[in-house]
Length: 591
Image (spheres, rainbow, N blue to C red):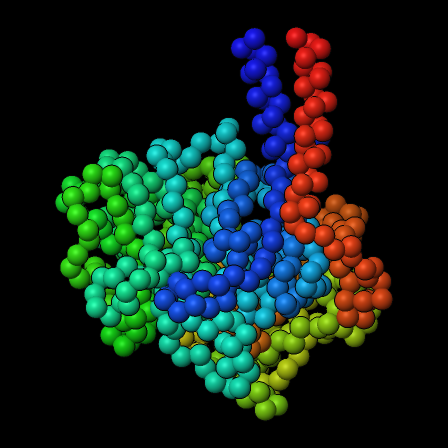
């Protein structure tokens, strides 16, 4: 009888995990409904974007090579797209969830994203990519676990904790984007949230009654803490009072394990730390995420504070907050922290072979792109942000969809590969036409006044150098060609540059953007088109059957039968239940 119950339990677990055939990679499915709810994270009631009624949204969990389906229902009053920050979407830009590759999901419609997390592990997040919506929420974490056959490069932690940190305004995204549309800057945020909650009342400047994040831990145990900066535009420094942060992973790559007392996390970046609960628990401890690269005395309110609570704690946290170990008035010391992030070349990642077995530093560079950012400027009477003098205009028809249906004139492939100084800034739907399988260096030159985080969809890249001043060709000799970290989002300090190397082996049209929402909204982005001239269906997938049409192709779009996420979930459960009943009947016959 015991073995029979064991078989039944296995059948139930299998049915809930996957509805794919045994011959395929395993799959996981989610149903997400994005809607407005009222919350008061900083003590002021406001409209936020929830996922399945919670803010921040639930975690997407998968394992290397799993197929992932996320059926997204749009219950907002405006179009929606979800993008998957750091997920490479190998051969499948159709699922990327940005305006240049996908038609938006109209209100009351749904769309199922379907992709494979091919050869990836690590910490990432999803968020709405349109209309400044991330400033109101709609984000959540993504965790891709190692396959069982590939060991972690550290002892398995006793537990996992996620921090979604970010600057926050008490006005929602529609108000904030109207400020930008009027030609004004957003100014100082109203605070910093940790997991959608405001600060613990660490002094009299914090209003009463604000809900704060409390993390319960046991003494002597070690936890993996995954941290994502999902904010609008502010770099944040993370620290946990009296505890060391052992850096172990960033955006899908294991790092050399280095201890830090505090760590700068820029907009759009994700990290994993191991933290051991090795204190005497005389009191609770502060968890702090505070604004960086600003006048920190003036920006004191832009500080998130949570509580680390030992199960044997003897009292509440008290006293002043811990301060960062580096001073932003000495930018060299700040940059050195980021330079210290190295790849663990001997550990395995998504594949059994060591991460360092790909010798990127021995590959000839066949192309150079220099992307220069300048402070926002007026173009045709509107405030705009540029990259190489171009402020991007998203076409009404997604670019690869226009290619497949031979729609002409949607975009131009004349984006300059380096800054052009003798022409005024302009609005263009201009993208890069790159060579498939070329190996290029990309230089992000930041002549703006703020720290910028740059992200490239569909790829990770090797961060080989960063420095202050203007990049020149002779700086190639200073590149780290051995153990540079590979990641998908990198900070560039004002008055500085960052150089990355990447192999253009993922066919499609991919977004290159600044992650700082204000600059992105104002046009600091472009796309890189990488097409295999000998395409045979193996290097790029065709458009999905459920593709949405818009723009010049909107006449191809069929009306969608609207039903709720709960009814769809019920349908899925009925299918799973039916599948279980068939298998259980077979098991009963065998037993």
